[in-house]
Length: 144
Image (tube, rainbow, N blue to C red; front, side, top):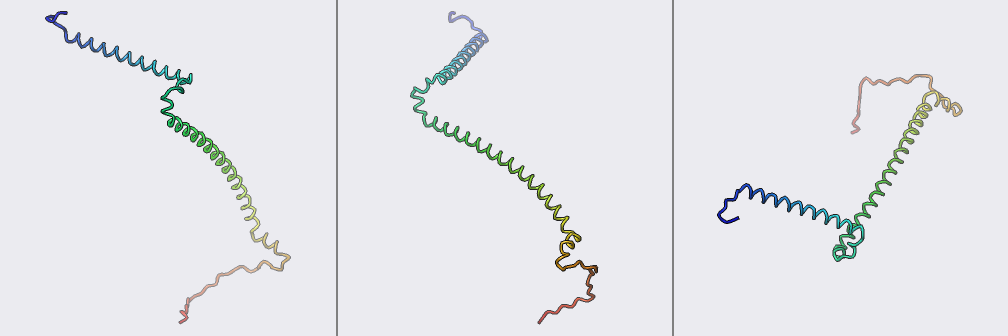
């Protein structure tokens, strides 16, 4: 093209856009191949021999510590859950035992069972019914 020729601005914009799209595709392919390469290096164990690994060793130890804590936390949660289930079962058994004992006690504390238990002791059931004592006038001495 010579310097005097007319260039369509839309055509130039389209070319630039096409170039940008091609560059983005190349960058994406490069990123994908880089991540695949990194995965293969991890699987091979090749990353262990690099200086990067040695430089990031404290971070790797920190991640290991976090993994150990996470595993321990899982075991602790499982133990607590098992104990909770056991205690709930025990609570159910104790509730049923309580209701059984309460009904037995209520049956034994009636008037007739108590009277029959006291027959040999000389204590007898009163044959007169209890009465209220009514006071018509309340008189209180202050004691001064």
